[in-house]
Image 1 (spheres, rainbow, N blue to C red):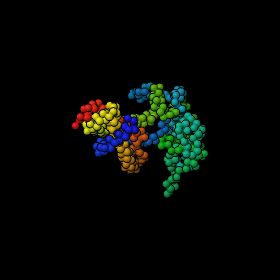
Image 2 (cartoon, helix red, strand yellow):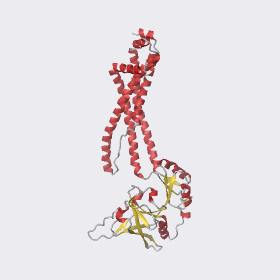
Image 3 (cartoon, rainbow, N blue to C red):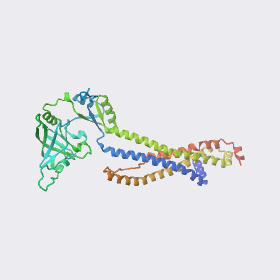
Image 4 (tube, rainbow, N blue to C red):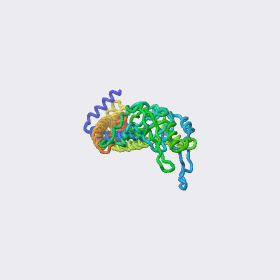
Length: 435
């Protein structure tokens, strides 16, 4: 018996009992649709979470801090500490996968910018790099190149500017446009308290090298100057030169070649005795949770498929009882046990395939309908909370329909295995005598 003859015979046998086949396939349709819809829901939730968390910053960055050990409650000082020194920078830079290690320091006092009649500012940071693009930052105006005597301003710092001495009836001036600031001289004023309790101020003239593009992170509210400049400011504030061998750096920014290396690098840095944090470790934990959720959802759908498989086995068992004489006749005209086995396995697999195909289409269609209603509801919620609206609620990856169809077909094949073996091993004489 050729494959074409076998395939034709299977189709004819299925077509003879359309009602029974349809009712049996309905169980497979429901089970497959449940698998597709529930797993698609889990994938959609995972993608939505990844999209929302993707805006928390550059995922190739690792924040590194000194390790201060345990604190002495009597003295209020750490019992031991591992400082971030220039040697630390060299050691971390030698790790495979590290593209840059950039020390940072903060202004040890408070200060403000003066631009025309406006005053304000943000967090003042000194960085040991001549180009902020090494931190993954870009400029919306000017350049990211940082030189002595220059300043680069975060995107939202200009929103903090105000007129401290407005004229009567004047609420304040509008902040200048970013492009208007590039190349202009601004005044940066630092204040400290003297030993007699008097406020002392010192001013510096700085040239604006650029204004950063919005990053939705710390840089939006920061002002950057070279490390040499921040050392000079802090030396005036503290009244003594900054000694990195004794005080170290408060923070290092480590950039990895690829996001996949970030968590491993953070663990290596922690093993070196420092504190390291990366948002990628948090995102991986969230992804792991949603992966488990997908498995649970898939298991719930698989239970429905298991019930459908029992229905297929029952249908095939009844079909064999009704067609016992037909089986005997097939064997009498030369059909082998293998031929009979192939016919009944093909019929059970065909029921699984038809049910799987219908379930895939139903599950995908229900997912699209759910997308419309769920996204509309979540968009309304995001307007109320101010959060960015989700982009997807139910997502069906390409592999899922293929997997579901193959799984349903195999489930049908296995469900018909026992009845088909019984049919294949029937004695032709016994089968022909069956009433």
